[in-house]
Image (cartoon, rainbow, N blue to C red; front, side):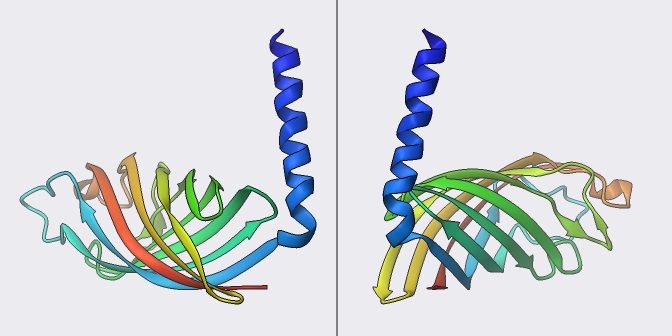
Length: 169
């Protein structure tokens, strides 16, 4: 019975992707700004900000109801210097969407030991032909790993709120 349900679900997804793929296959490239807030307290001996602005550059591919996003967040002066967070997401939805993914932080000339996980939801509008606006929220969680120094080892959960403009082709 489980195999039958699995087969029916897979057939449905294949048919759905084929129905949308020829006319609505979209590649989108763009960038935007987000405001992030760390939900957990930064240790008192740290001089890091608990919130700030960040920039995002992203690419999306959505051949059907499901899509893929590859992005890099640029967080100026996050840990005393710029931090970069490349991540990938799988999402579902066209106007309203939700998704999940994984990424890794790069700061202090090294990558984190462990990845972070991302949950994202938002709204996409086509403002003009081939110009899209996204308003979204992200929740990131991980056990922050040692980058190079032991004093950078702490847990953090972070919320990102922001928008992006993308061009489709």
